[in-house]
Every structure is written in C-alpha cells, then in structure tokens.
Amino acid sequence: MDTIHIPTKAKNKEDARKFLAFVAKPEIQQLVNDVLLQIPTNSKAKPADDEFLNIGVEMLADASGTAQFYDRDTDPAMAKEGMKGFQEFMVKPERVDQILKRLEKVRQRTFKN
Image (cartoon, rainbow, N blue to C red):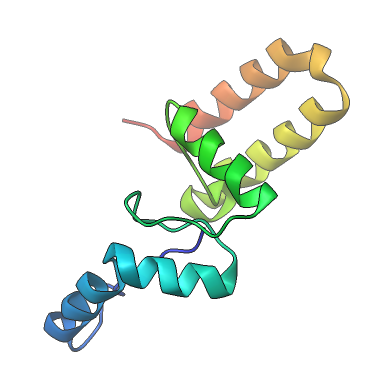
C-alpha cells in the first residue's frame, strides 16, 4: 500500500489538497491500484482480485492497528537499536524480555520528557 502526502514546505498546498481529494476517491483508488496491484488506501475501493492482495486486505481488516517505516519515523538512535532488536528477535525469539529491556533503556534515554 502506497500513500501520497503533501510535503511540509509545499508551495501550492491548496491544489495539492485538491489532488489528494481526487486521488483518494474510491473509483480513482480502484483504477490506480488495479494497475499497481496494491491495496487501495480507501477502504471503499475494491482491490484487484489477487490472492496476495486478498490476504493483505483481510490482515488489515483484522488488525488492531498499523505501523510502518519504523526506522524512518523515529529518532535515529531509537531506530538503530530497534532494528537490531527486531533482527535479534527474529533469530532468537526466546530473548524477547532481554531485547525489550534494552529497548526500553534506549527509549528512556532518547525520548526524555
């Protein structure tokens, strides 16, 4: 699933908002994503009939929440340690408590209130 955003320093935000409103329409999402074979961001748009897209749509519908681009969306120090933690967990899931304790220390250091 890809999304489109307006950059903070965009010069023509009024037209950018009009464009986003157009692209977000269910019928436009359906056209675009039929070609791209992606899950539409508008839940009223029907995704292409594809085995993997159908699984993805079902997973999203059942999810209690979503997150993406962890390494880009957080502080670089937290991202670095978090990615290490994800990798370690994938190989040694039995270390989950140690990993979480280490990440909590990094979180407290990085995001001081």
